[in-house]
Picture 1 (cartoon, rainbow, N blue to C red):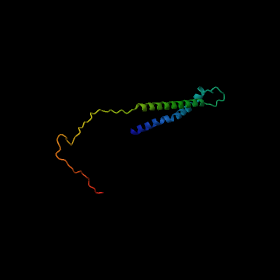
Picture 2: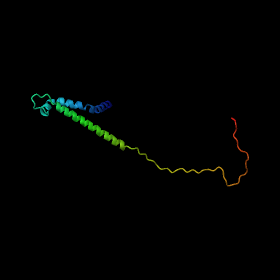
Picture 3: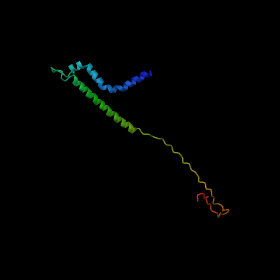
Picture 4: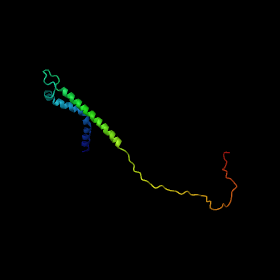
Length: 125
């Protein structure tokens, strides 16, 4: 079942690339009828066209449709690109308040005074 689905999807992806081939085969299948009914030069005695003028018209029409579809796809891609925006939902959090701790309290008088000043050891001097 998976293989059938894969083959089907692959064929569907390849169908647009064979569009002009389908136009040409439908022309070849109906060439005698086209040359007798639709062709511009059908009433001429020495008609060498055999409906090729209609084939050229059909191929040009198909190419124009392809170009138009590509332009539409580009426009849609641009619109989709512009409309897709990333939205992030931010929640407001209450800030954490910290109280500064004072290690020295100035409420009482100092007990003693040190006259010696700290000097780091001098290994490299």
